[in-house]
Image (cartoon, rainbow, N blue to C red; front, side, top):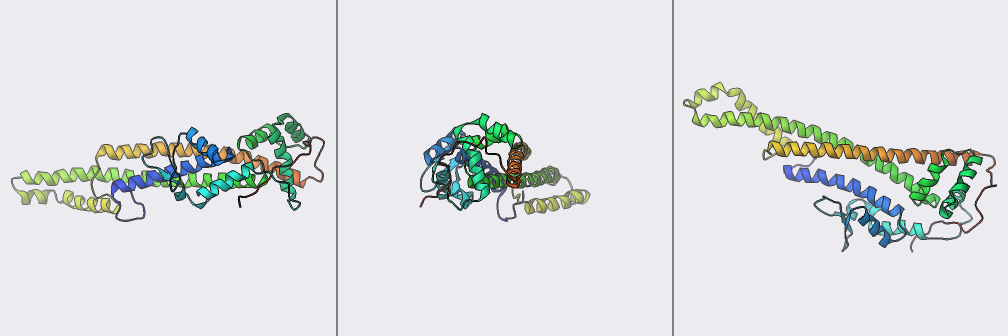
Length: 305
Protein backbone atom coordinates (compact mmCIF):
# COMPACT_ATOMS: atom_id res chain seq x y z
CA UNK A 1 0.00 0.00 0.00
CA UNK A 2 1.99 3.00 -1.24
CA UNK A 3 2.04 6.18 0.80
CA UNK A 4 4.54 8.19 -1.17
CA UNK A 5 7.13 7.40 1.51
CA UNK A 6 9.72 4.68 1.18
CA UNK A 7 10.99 2.52 3.95
CA UNK A 8 7.68 1.97 5.76
CA UNK A 9 6.79 -1.62 6.55
CA UNK A 10 3.41 -3.08 5.61
CA UNK A 11 2.24 -2.75 9.23
CA UNK A 12 3.42 0.88 9.49
CA UNK A 13 1.63 1.80 6.28
CA UNK A 14 -1.60 0.29 7.60
CA UNK A 15 -1.34 2.23 10.87
CA UNK A 16 -0.46 5.43 9.02
CA UNK A 17 -3.58 5.30 6.84
CA UNK A 18 -5.79 4.17 9.69
CA UNK A 19 -4.70 7.18 11.73
CA UNK A 20 -5.74 9.62 9.02
CA UNK A 21 -9.37 8.55 9.37
CA UNK A 22 -9.33 9.11 13.14
CA UNK A 23 -8.15 12.69 12.55
CA UNK A 24 -11.00 13.42 10.13
CA UNK A 25 -13.57 12.09 12.61
CA UNK A 26 -11.96 13.96 15.50
CA UNK A 27 -12.14 17.31 13.64
CA UNK A 28 -15.88 16.82 13.11
CA UNK A 29 -16.43 15.87 16.78
CA UNK A 30 -14.37 18.83 18.04
CA UNK A 31 -16.26 21.30 15.83
CA UNK A 32 -19.61 19.96 17.05
CA UNK A 33 -18.51 20.14 20.70
CA UNK A 34 -17.24 23.72 20.29
CA UNK A 35 -20.41 24.88 18.55
CA UNK A 36 -22.54 23.69 21.50
CA UNK A 37 -20.28 24.73 24.42
CA UNK A 38 -19.55 28.03 26.14
CA UNK A 39 -16.42 27.13 28.10
CA UNK A 40 -13.48 24.75 28.05
CA UNK A 41 -14.85 22.41 30.73
CA UNK A 42 -18.16 22.02 28.91
CA UNK A 43 -16.25 21.36 25.68
CA UNK A 44 -14.33 18.49 27.33
CA UNK A 45 -17.59 17.10 28.76
CA UNK A 46 -19.19 17.17 25.30
CA UNK A 47 -16.21 15.28 23.88
CA UNK A 48 -16.61 12.64 26.60
CA UNK A 49 -20.33 12.39 25.88
CA UNK A 50 -19.40 11.84 22.22
CA UNK A 51 -17.45 8.78 23.37
CA UNK A 52 -13.94 10.21 23.40
CA UNK A 53 -11.39 9.53 26.11
CA UNK A 54 -9.69 12.78 27.14
CA UNK A 55 -6.04 13.07 28.12
CA UNK A 56 -4.76 16.41 29.40
CA UNK A 57 -1.06 17.02 29.86
CA UNK A 58 1.44 19.12 28.01
CA UNK A 59 -0.73 18.63 24.92
CA UNK A 60 -4.46 17.87 24.80
CA UNK A 61 -5.32 14.57 23.10
CA UNK A 62 -8.38 12.40 22.48
CA UNK A 63 -9.00 8.73 21.75
CA UNK A 64 -12.16 7.38 20.14
CA UNK A 65 -13.70 4.01 21.02
CA UNK A 66 -11.70 1.18 19.40
CA UNK A 67 -8.88 3.62 18.53
CA UNK A 68 -5.49 2.27 19.60
CA UNK A 69 -3.56 5.51 20.16
CA UNK A 70 -4.50 9.00 21.32
CA UNK A 71 -4.61 11.77 18.69
CA UNK A 72 -3.00 15.06 19.68
CA UNK A 73 -5.03 18.17 18.89
CA UNK A 74 -1.87 19.89 17.69
CA UNK A 75 -1.61 17.29 14.89
CA UNK A 76 -4.94 18.38 13.34
CA UNK A 77 -3.69 21.85 12.24
CA UNK A 78 -3.33 25.23 13.93
CA UNK A 79 -7.08 25.96 13.78
CA UNK A 80 -7.55 23.13 16.29
CA UNK A 81 -4.79 24.15 18.70
CA UNK A 82 -5.81 24.43 22.35
CA UNK A 83 -5.43 28.22 22.14
CA UNK A 84 -7.76 28.49 19.14
CA UNK A 85 -10.28 26.16 20.76
CA UNK A 86 -10.43 28.53 23.76
CA UNK A 87 -10.79 31.54 21.43
CA UNK A 88 -13.67 29.89 19.59
CA UNK A 89 -15.34 29.01 22.90
CA UNK A 90 -14.94 32.60 24.08
CA UNK A 91 -17.06 33.74 21.13
CA UNK A 92 -19.96 31.69 22.44
CA UNK A 93 -20.08 33.37 25.84
CA UNK A 94 -18.89 36.93 25.22
CA UNK A 95 -21.54 39.64 25.18
CA UNK A 96 -20.67 43.18 24.11
CA UNK A 97 -22.55 46.09 22.62
CA UNK A 98 -22.91 46.06 18.87
CA UNK A 99 -20.18 48.22 17.28
CA UNK A 100 -21.50 51.06 15.14
CA UNK A 101 -19.38 49.92 12.18
CA UNK A 102 -21.14 46.53 11.92
CA UNK A 103 -22.19 45.76 8.35
CA UNK A 104 -25.85 45.56 7.38
CA UNK A 105 -25.66 41.78 7.01
CA UNK A 106 -24.17 41.41 10.50
CA UNK A 107 -26.89 43.63 12.01
CA UNK A 108 -29.54 41.66 10.14
CA UNK A 109 -28.09 38.42 11.49
CA UNK A 110 -28.31 39.79 15.04
CA UNK A 111 -32.02 40.47 14.49
CA UNK A 112 -32.54 36.91 13.28
CA UNK A 113 -30.41 35.30 16.01
CA UNK A 114 -32.25 37.21 18.75
CA UNK A 115 -35.25 34.99 18.07
CA UNK A 116 -32.97 31.99 18.61
CA UNK A 117 -31.46 33.24 21.89
CA UNK A 118 -34.95 33.92 23.29
CA UNK A 119 -36.35 30.64 21.96
CA UNK A 120 -39.09 32.53 20.12
CA UNK A 121 -39.72 30.00 17.33
CA UNK A 122 -43.29 31.17 16.67
CA UNK A 123 -42.23 34.80 16.34
CA UNK A 124 -39.40 33.86 14.00
CA UNK A 125 -41.72 31.79 11.79
CA UNK A 126 -44.23 34.66 11.54
CA UNK A 127 -41.48 37.15 10.75
CA UNK A 128 -39.95 34.79 8.17
CA UNK A 129 -43.33 34.25 6.52
CA UNK A 130 -43.93 38.00 6.33
CA UNK A 131 -40.57 38.38 4.57
CA UNK A 132 -41.14 35.38 2.25
CA UNK A 133 -38.25 33.37 3.71
CA UNK A 134 -37.86 29.64 3.01
CA UNK A 135 -38.09 26.84 5.58
CA UNK A 136 -38.22 29.01 8.70
CA UNK A 137 -38.46 26.06 11.11
CA UNK A 138 -35.44 24.35 9.58
CA UNK A 139 -33.46 27.59 9.77
CA UNK A 140 -34.46 28.27 13.38
CA UNK A 141 -33.61 24.72 14.51
CA UNK A 142 -30.25 24.72 12.76
CA UNK A 143 -29.13 28.05 14.22
CA UNK A 144 -30.31 26.97 17.67
CA UNK A 145 -28.75 23.48 17.64
CA UNK A 146 -25.38 24.79 16.44
CA UNK A 147 -25.35 27.83 18.74
CA UNK A 148 -24.80 30.22 15.81
CA UNK A 149 -25.62 33.46 17.56
CA UNK A 150 -23.52 35.95 15.59
CA UNK A 151 -22.61 36.48 11.97
CA UNK A 152 -18.90 35.77 12.42
CA UNK A 153 -19.64 32.35 13.92
CA UNK A 154 -22.11 31.64 11.12
CA UNK A 155 -19.50 32.43 8.47
CA UNK A 156 -16.92 30.31 10.29
CA UNK A 157 -19.43 27.47 10.58
CA UNK A 158 -20.04 27.58 6.83
CA UNK A 159 -16.28 27.41 6.24
CA UNK A 160 -15.93 24.53 8.73
CA UNK A 161 -18.67 22.49 7.07
CA UNK A 162 -17.23 23.14 3.61
CA UNK A 163 -13.78 22.11 4.84
CA UNK A 164 -15.21 18.95 6.43
CA UNK A 165 -16.93 17.99 3.17
CA UNK A 166 -13.68 18.50 1.29
CA UNK A 167 -11.78 16.43 3.88
CA UNK A 168 -14.35 13.63 3.59
CA UNK A 169 -14.07 13.69 -0.21
CA UNK A 170 -10.29 13.51 0.02
CA UNK A 171 -10.51 10.60 2.46
CA UNK A 172 -12.95 8.75 0.17
CA UNK A 173 -10.52 9.18 -2.73
CA UNK A 174 -7.68 8.01 -0.50
CA UNK A 175 -9.64 4.96 0.63
CA UNK A 176 -10.51 4.10 -2.98
CA UNK A 177 -6.82 4.26 -3.87
CA UNK A 178 -5.95 2.13 -0.85
CA UNK A 179 -8.61 -0.42 -1.75
CA UNK A 180 -7.32 -0.68 -5.30
CA UNK A 181 -3.77 -1.11 -4.00
CA UNK A 182 -4.82 -3.73 -1.45
CA UNK A 183 -6.65 -5.72 -4.11
CA UNK A 184 -3.55 -5.63 -6.31
CA UNK A 185 -1.46 -6.75 -3.32
CA UNK A 186 -3.96 -9.52 -2.59
CA UNK A 187 -3.80 -10.79 -6.17
CA UNK A 188 0.01 -10.56 -6.29
CA UNK A 189 0.37 -12.36 -2.95
CA UNK A 190 -1.90 -15.21 -4.07
CA UNK A 191 0.14 -15.65 -7.26
CA UNK A 192 3.41 -15.30 -5.36
CA UNK A 193 2.46 -18.10 -2.96
CA UNK A 194 1.69 -20.43 -5.87
CA UNK A 195 5.02 -19.62 -7.51
CA UNK A 196 6.81 -19.99 -4.20
CA UNK A 197 5.35 -23.47 -3.73
CA UNK A 198 6.61 -24.46 -7.17
CA UNK A 199 10.10 -23.27 -6.23
CA UNK A 200 9.98 -25.04 -2.85
CA UNK A 201 8.97 -28.29 -4.57
CA UNK A 202 12.22 -28.14 -6.52
CA UNK A 203 14.00 -29.35 -3.39
CA UNK A 204 12.34 -32.74 -3.68
CA UNK A 205 12.64 -33.01 -7.48
CA UNK A 206 14.71 -35.94 -8.81
CA UNK A 207 16.21 -33.71 -11.51
CA UNK A 208 16.37 -30.09 -10.25
CA UNK A 209 17.74 -28.70 -13.54
CA UNK A 210 14.99 -30.28 -15.58
CA UNK A 211 12.43 -29.13 -13.00
CA UNK A 212 13.64 -25.50 -13.20
CA UNK A 213 13.58 -25.61 -17.00
CA UNK A 214 10.03 -26.96 -16.95
CA UNK A 215 8.88 -24.28 -14.48
CA UNK A 216 10.90 -21.37 -15.86
CA UNK A 217 7.74 -19.22 -16.19
CA UNK A 218 6.92 -19.65 -12.49
CA UNK A 219 10.49 -18.74 -11.51
CA UNK A 220 10.39 -15.55 -13.60
CA UNK A 221 6.92 -14.63 -12.33
CA UNK A 222 8.09 -15.21 -8.75
CA UNK A 223 10.92 -12.69 -9.14
CA UNK A 224 8.67 -10.19 -10.92
CA UNK A 225 5.96 -10.40 -8.26
CA UNK A 226 8.49 -10.07 -5.45
CA UNK A 227 9.81 -6.82 -6.96
CA UNK A 228 6.31 -5.41 -7.55
CA UNK A 229 5.29 -6.19 -3.97
CA UNK A 230 8.42 -4.48 -2.65
CA UNK A 231 7.55 -1.42 -4.76
CA UNK A 232 4.15 -1.45 -3.06
CA UNK A 233 5.81 -1.42 0.36
CA UNK A 234 5.36 -5.13 1.10
CA UNK A 235 8.61 -6.64 2.37
CA UNK A 236 7.00 -9.55 4.23
CA UNK A 237 4.16 -11.45 2.60
CA UNK A 238 1.05 -11.04 4.81
CA UNK A 239 -1.41 -13.86 5.31
CA UNK A 240 -4.51 -14.07 3.12
CA UNK A 241 -6.71 -13.43 6.16
CA UNK A 242 -4.74 -10.31 7.07
CA UNK A 243 -5.11 -8.81 3.60
CA UNK A 244 -8.81 -9.69 3.44
CA UNK A 245 -9.40 -8.13 6.86
CA UNK A 246 -7.65 -4.97 5.74
CA UNK A 247 -9.86 -4.79 2.64
CA UNK A 248 -13.00 -5.30 4.73
CA UNK A 249 -11.91 -2.57 7.18
CA UNK A 250 -11.31 -0.16 4.31
CA UNK A 251 -14.70 -0.97 2.78
CA UNK A 252 -16.36 -0.38 6.16
CA UNK A 253 -14.51 2.90 6.62
CA UNK A 254 -15.40 3.90 3.06
CA UNK A 255 -19.12 3.36 3.74
CA UNK A 256 -18.90 5.31 7.03
CA UNK A 257 -17.07 8.21 5.37
CA UNK A 258 -19.61 8.32 2.54
CA UNK A 259 -22.41 8.52 5.14
CA UNK A 260 -20.49 11.25 6.98
CA UNK A 261 -20.12 13.20 3.73
CA UNK A 262 -23.84 12.84 3.01
CA UNK A 263 -24.72 14.21 6.46
CA UNK A 264 -22.37 17.15 5.93
CA UNK A 265 -23.92 17.81 2.52
CA UNK A 266 -27.34 17.97 4.20
CA UNK A 267 -25.89 20.68 6.45
CA UNK A 268 -24.59 22.47 3.37
CA UNK A 269 -28.08 22.47 1.85
CA UNK A 270 -29.53 23.96 5.03
CA UNK A 271 -26.79 26.59 5.11
CA UNK A 272 -27.48 27.40 1.45
CA UNK A 273 -31.12 28.05 2.35
CA UNK A 274 -30.08 30.33 5.21
CA UNK A 275 -27.72 32.22 2.91
CA UNK A 276 -30.43 32.51 0.25
CA UNK A 277 -32.71 34.00 2.89
CA UNK A 278 -29.96 36.41 3.82
CA UNK A 279 -29.45 37.45 0.21
CA UNK A 280 -33.18 37.93 -0.30
CA UNK A 281 -33.41 40.14 2.79
CA UNK A 282 -30.31 42.16 1.91
CA UNK A 283 -31.58 42.75 -1.62
CA UNK A 284 -35.04 43.68 -0.40
CA UNK A 285 -35.69 47.45 -0.58
CA UNK A 286 -37.47 47.32 2.77
CA UNK A 287 -37.36 44.63 5.44
CA UNK A 288 -40.51 44.26 7.49
CA UNK A 289 -39.85 45.16 11.10
CA UNK A 290 -43.38 44.52 12.37
CA UNK A 291 -42.35 41.26 13.95
CA UNK A 292 -38.75 41.98 14.88
CA UNK A 293 -37.85 41.00 18.44
CA UNK A 294 -37.97 43.56 21.19
CA UNK A 295 -34.86 45.70 21.31
CA UNK A 296 -32.25 44.24 23.63
CA UNK A 297 -28.50 44.08 24.01
CA UNK A 298 -27.34 41.89 21.09
CA UNK A 299 -24.78 39.14 21.23
CA UNK A 300 -21.53 39.64 19.40
CA UNK A 301 -17.92 38.52 19.67
CA UNK A 302 -14.80 39.40 21.59
CA UNK A 303 -11.52 37.56 21.74
CA UNK A 304 -9.54 36.84 24.86
CA UNK A 305 -6.80 39.37 25.29
